[in-house]
Amino acid sequence: MPTLSELVARHTTCDPADLEWMHSLVSDWQLLADLSFADLILWIPLRDESAWVAVAQMRPTTGPTVYHDDVVGSIVAAGERPLIDTAWREHRICREGDPDWSSGVPVREETIPVRRDDHFVAVIQRSTNLSSARTPSRLELTYLQSASDLAQMVAEGRFPFPDEGPILVRSPRVGDGLLRLDRAGRVTYASPNALSAYRRLGLHADLVGTELGKTTATLCYSGEPINEDLMLVASGRTPRETEVEAGAIVVQLRAIPLIVGGGRIGALVLVRDVTELRRRERELLTKDATIREIHHRVKNNLQTVAALLRLQARRLRVPEGREALEEAVRRVGSIAIVHETLSHTPEEIVDFDDIADRVIVMTGEVSAANVVVRRVGCFGVLPAMIATPVAMVLTELLQNAVQHGFAYGSGTVKVIVSRTEERLDVVVADDGQGLPEGFELEASTSLGLQIVRTLVVGELSGRLAVRPGKDGGTEVSVTIPVLPA
Image 1 (tube, one colour):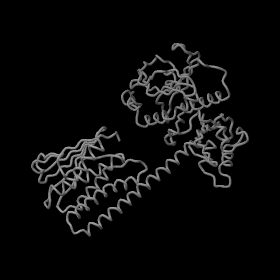
Image 2 (cartoon, rainbow, N blue to C red):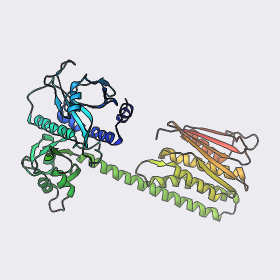
Image 3 (cartoon, rainbow, N blue to C red):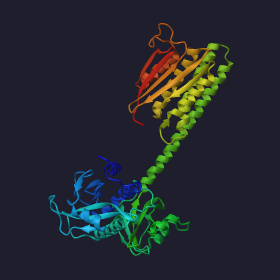
Image 4 (tube, rainbow, N blue to C red):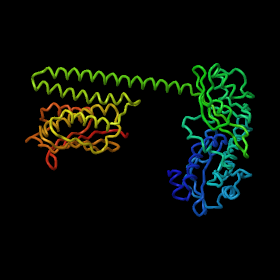
């Protein structure tokens, strides 16, 4: 399905400011759909205004839908839907007198012109399924009146709020709880869910008739400095969100000022009990902190082991033993680098490019030869369970290239990386003296290559190949399956 931006670019000449206004409207019009118990379709005129194209659609969560199929991308000629033409031409909200039965169910149609600053950019078609119509309750009457006020604000260019930030996915919705305030900030209606949330905060009296700001402050900030955001939100004077706590209970509030005809007539305050959500988030934060601390301690322990091995190597007088311990120090160090990176991130994923660059630097520091090691391409983000063995593989391949490819000469080693959605390809290529005659990977007795083969093939389910380079030297290619980053 094409996006709103794609449809606007394809069919219209809307400027970026108008497009951004429509994006803001669509990001928050679930509120209007739920209050209206109606489907919403956003129509914009084509360049020559000979037809209309549907660029966005929203179904209500509070009532039955009219459109079971998506209509985004549909084009209707001018005149086919007179209410859209009238709303656009006369810049007013239009309502059809009698229900439309063409779809098999009674549907009431309305159209709302969408205004930004001093001009109109689109028309909202509001379609209400009347098949389950009944005598409306006070909740439904409050919803419908609030929807009418919001629709008028859309037609006057006062909704969405230009200074309000993007609406969060977890912002309160109509069904979570709704309060309607008058101009003075007193509650004129409280939905059962909203009242229940305030009961959990400790309210024992009736909420209707009270000043929401004072009542909420008394419940949550007794003897403490009052959060400034609370009074702004609870009075309904500014479009903002805040959270209040009383004991272990956390309630989220979102204010929508109602400004109709140039004056503020009241406000809607959406209420949501987020106690359980915040409890889980705190548990996750605690868990993340614990995991990072574990990685930090593992890194410290590995560095201690490396230091002990380094001390032991200095005391050995047998060159082969000293060299073996120094190789062990480098292997332990490559693992420590991964754990150090994980100790600074809240997730079990790492930016492996930083790790690769540190391994490259470590290889150059211990090389007796004048060898330049360069990385071409990006590893990207890797999960910890893959990053650790890949770091060890890279360490071994670079060490082999430097030690056996050049001895005490000079040259270049390239780490060439390519990443797709399904795999990671790494080639370590040097321009050194090349492979010994009759070399076979399976028959090699090199501990480093045995480690690489075990990690790549056995642990990572990848492929390993060693071959002569095209222009001399040696190329080692590693292919590892990975999940999309």
